[in-house]
Length: 253
Image (cartoon, rainbow, N blue to C red; front, side, top):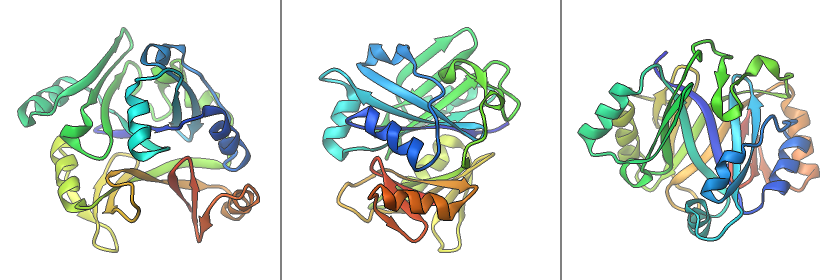
């Protein structure tokens, strides 16, 4: 295992409406709510998606980091949480590049380095190590250390990629590439791409007024047509294979 895209975190002003949308449109059910995020002034909900997790956090107190992010960009992408086999080399690489660790989480079975978004760009990139987490469906501490095989299949089968937007996507892609120590390639439109073990990070021009950030998520769906129909019935913005929810562009295939 090199790097897996094990979890994507979104931030929202209100949690309950997003939970309802993800259930009614994407067929996702909450598998865990972590009381531990309360120390950051947040509440959260996690949804299993294939062998990964989609998380939404919302502030419940004033003055939180997530709240300041919401003031700048509104609801949207917040963190890209990757899984690796060893955090030691990752920390050394960050030290070499001058990337600060904004927050460190340490449990007996799980350790995580959350990197400062100003040093990486667009979103908070996180490196995590999970004891016994080598299998694709292995345990994951943020979801109460349960295996994803414990959850029923949903209409969304997996997260196959994330999209980071910037006024200078080439610069942003190079920075993520050097921090992650993974090469850049190109997609069919000559845009920079980083391939992880189970997903691809795409770097695209910012097309809205929100500036740099985690802006999109690619989903493999069992029934694309039904999902798009449900999105329109909920009056979500939908164009082609894209649905906008919680400030994110969801591309369904």
